[in-house]
Length: 188
Image (cartoon, rainbow, N blue to C red; front, side, top):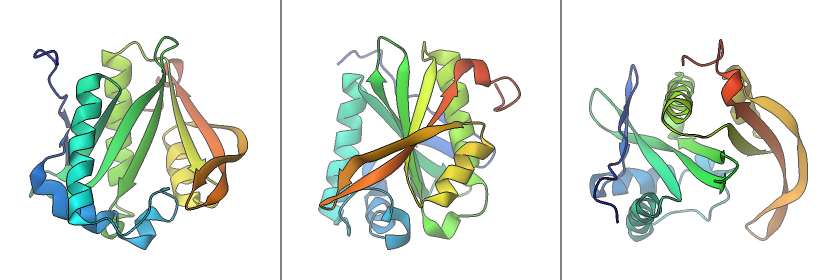
């Protein structure tokens, strides 16, 4: 590992976006075991404490390898883990990444994920050579699609049966946000 590689901590009005740590394991387990959260998430639930520990370790490994960054979303008032936002390279040479996220259902409707994603998008376009951010959302996940559209992501189309989890195929909707879209959309 490159010792100069430091996990980027982001600061928004109400959130601290930081690296996941062992202190988050219980919250990760609770959030990823909530059927409301994982309905469209593509993971098997419930998530045990041991599996949550593995998730924290995998997030660190993926960051160290340069493959991905997954920020823990922590409330500034108490540093409580309430979800995460992650990016991973889909085509590093072309400057394309994919974004994914989840938020504890008891935190929904407060604009926290809008705040978090706006912070990540701003960071990505200011600090990296990324030119395109993609998001894939399962059909039926209207809350997530509305969130992306509020942030200025463009709905590009339907990818039929491209997702596969829990033994089933799922249609996904492709959204994108280009670096040139940032003016007037997300504080950049």
